[in-house]
Length: 329
Image 1 (cartoon, rainbow, N blue to C red):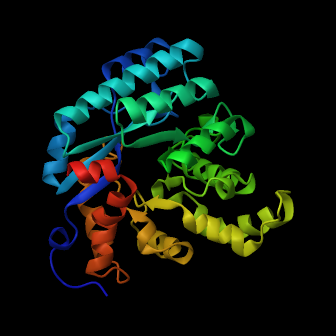
Image 2 (spheres, rainbow, N blue to C red):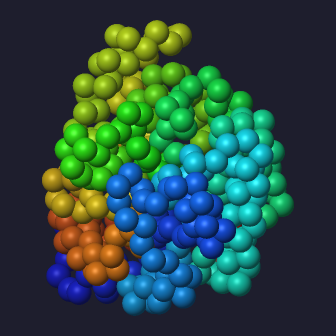
C-alpha cells in the first residue's frame, strides 16, 4: 500500500531512462535533409544545461541520454555511419564531463548491419557508452527481421540493454487523422516491434538482451493476450510457442512509465509484468518539464507501490540494467 506523505520524499534519487538530446550536428543534418519535425511533432529546444537544471529541480539523480525519432532514417550508407559516430562521440564527451549524472545510449547505422556491428563495438568498448538505442522499425523492417539477426546475437552475447524508441510506422500519413505520429502511431509501432521480436523467435534466441519499451509499452498491456494467441497460431517458429510462452515474453520486457502514469495504464502493466520491470522516464524535452512532478506524484500514489516498489522504479531496476552508470553514481 502507498503511504501518506509528499511524493518527492518517497520517490526520489531517480534514474531517468528516457531522456533525449539533440547535438548541433544532428540537428543541422536533419534540417539539411528536410527533416523538420518528428512525425508532425515539433522539434523542441534542447541544451545540456536545461537537462541538468530539470534534473536538479525534480530530484533526478541521473539520466540516460539518447537520440529520439527519427533516429538516422534521413541518411543512408556512409553518411549514416559518419553521423552515428559523431553523435556517439559527443555523447561520450557529455558523460565524461558529468559522469555521475549522465549515461548515454549508442545510436547505430542500422541500414548497414555490418556497420552497425562495428559501431556497436566502438561505442560500447571504446567510448564506454551504457547501452544502445534502437528504433521500432528501420525503413519498414521491424526488429525481428532476419537482417538484424547478427546484431541481436551480438547484443545477446554482450548482455546489452537496449532502449527501443518508436518511430513512424510504414505509410504514416498525418492528413488521415490530423494528429502527429506520437499521438497514437508511436505506441502502436512499439507494439508491432514487440510482436516482431517475439513472433520471429528473436527474443527466445537472445534472452540476455534487456529490452526497454517506452511509454508504458504502447498498447502491449491491452493487446497482450490477443497477440499471444496469434503468435501461437501464426508465427510458425519452431519449437512452437504457446500462449503462456508468448505472455511470458511480453512480461520479460522492461517498461518505462513515460506518459503511462494514469492508474489504468499502470494497472495494465502490472497484469503482464512485475514491479521489477518498471522504470522511470520523463521524455524531456519532448514532454515539458512541468509534466514531471504530476507523473512522479501519480506513481507514488498508486496503491500497489510500497516504499520498496517505489525505490525499484525510481532507481533500483535501472541500476541493474545500466551497471556502468550505477558504478559512476
